[in-house]
Length: 131
Figure 1 (cartoon, helix red, strand yellow):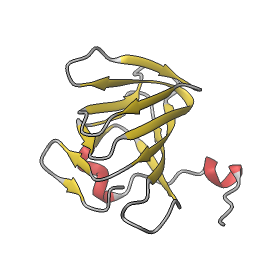
Figure 2 (cartoon, one colour):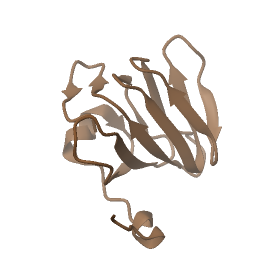
Figure 3 (cartoon, helix red, strand yellow):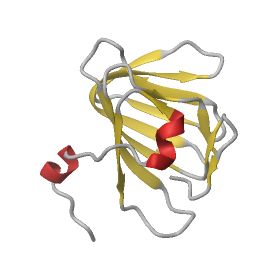
């Protein structure tokens, strides 16, 4: 078991280099320990500053988002953007093309992302470790 205090979780490091091509605006990301097998979920705590977002992507095994702070948008391909706020959850089925990020004029948004399978960035890159 690994304990991570709420104080430590408030300190979210800058976005790792491997994600820079897939995000716009200022974003921070903390990978949380969730298992060591490729079949395990990837768990990320992501902080989007106002107006920041990720690009279109999908998860081969699906994704669950839980908004912990602020407000933002999520959008599935072909659908209208949906406003999400702290306490909201979003379930993305496997292979659904989508994006998520903070509202432009708001406090920013932080969400916990639980991801299964590979991340496929729709610029053609695949994140092979699924996180």
